[in-house]
Length: 318
Image 1 (tube, one colour):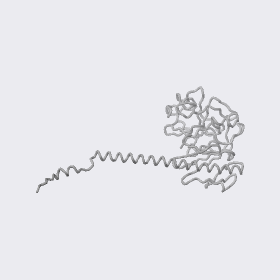
Image 2 (spheres, rainbow, N blue to C red):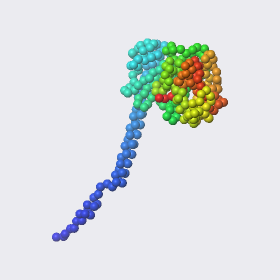
Image 3 (cartoon, rainbow, N blue to C red):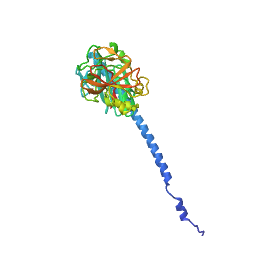
Image 4 (spheres, helix red, strand yellow):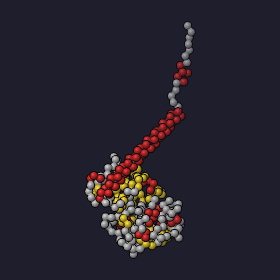
């Protein structure tokens, strides 16, 4: 009989587990696959939420259009169930957002409105004359701030000779009392109207949901983000900084493109066609702080003006 020698030690040594390197490679591969799966899932979820918001807003716009046709104006208010409560209560035209979607409705005039729909991190907006669009495209991020890309233009135009009053109708001025002149540069508002008759600094005022009228300090943060020193930013009633005005104006590096449009002065006339005046939400008795740009200055003026002037509004995200 032949004797077979078996080298047990040799065989055992060949049957080894994963090395540390192999384990690390395996963990990395699993992590990559998990990341790809997560990104894919997130993308699918976002696309699904976008479709839901667009559908909700399109359906809501249709209902509001029928309401307007029957009543001569869009609702001036909705109740907690998103049903028209003014000027006529009508439960036939309740807006019905999908699950986990919230609506924010703001009347603009008898023939226009703004309706925002939010689901998770997404917000879409629709008006009487526009299709649903991603609200994120309307904002520019600078540092930790998120600024609107355009001056506010909502409300019913009144002539410059008239004061804007707390009459439940959002009113605006348009240069030369021509409605279309508000389109490119935004509308002008007296401070109280812009603040929606709330005097708290940093209030939403007439800005859209999740944004507010910037405070004097908000403007300072922006200016310092663009290179102004704290000492320069704190200076009163003078032109401050170096080139921050140029950065903020049209075609400037900030991307905010603040237009140089006229303003409505307290006497009821328009002035300053080569300048920009923008309100802050910070008041000082009968005046409020503002920012002032001019075509022939590269810097920014910080001063106080009486609240009865009509200035522009550039909203700031919360």
